[in-house]
Amino acid sequence: MLKKIILTGANGQLGKSYIKLLLENDYKVVAVDINTDQLAEFGTDLEVTKLDITDPIAVNQLFNEHSDVYGLINNAGIGVFTPFEDRTAEEFMDVVKVNLLGTFLMCQGAIKRMKLRSEGKIVNIGSIYGVVSSDPRIYGNSRRNNSEVYSISKAGIIQLTKYLATHFGHVNIQTNSISPGGVYNRQSDDFVRNYESKTPMNRMANPEDLHSTLLFLLSASSNYVNGQNIVVDGGFTSW
Image 1 (cartoon, rainbow, N blue to C red):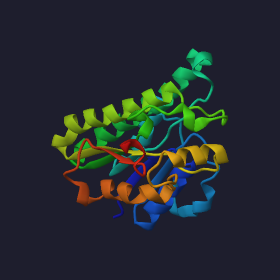
Image 2: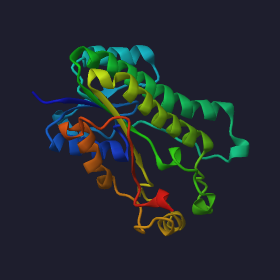
Image 3: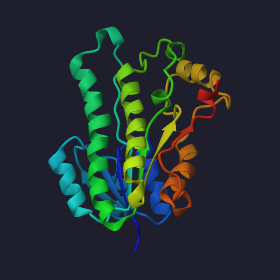
Image 4: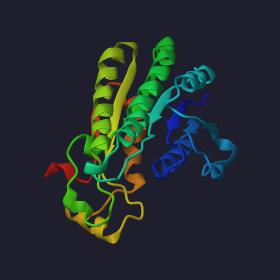
């Protein structure tokens, strides 16, 4: 029987890359997103669920339907790009709700089911900006300055990872996080040039750069790896 992985944020750049990777490695994938318009390309190999991960009732129903979940990848996340001085409370809370509350609810739902089988893998997607502050010099005139609330939410996800690892490791559930560096997605030339100048490997990440770490954390090879935040950033945070 194929092991079942639930993946949130499935409709985005990284989500679609992870889907392809997981299907190629013989996992059964349940792709979750509030918008699923880009997932038809995977055909019947993929189970698609349109879902708001901040809705506790909907999340609970998801896990009732997939109580045999083996792995959870919390990839859903949003940001906000207005200047700090103009940030509204609504914008702030929107990011917190999706990035933190959504991740919490998904972890809670998964752990309740994983405990029954004493087996499970949770991989939370953090960010280098949950580890270090963003550098405003990188962003120049791109109008996409990283927000304080995005960094706060990603730091919270990393800490949630450690909490879950220490509280549920004894029932054979390993919880870890991956914190990617900047992933190339047609950003402005100015931004890319500035970002690459701060990266020892002199390039931005591609989605494929994260694949081996993700597969490792879902596999039996990581059965004694728990509570770790693995930074995959080409050395960006090593300066």
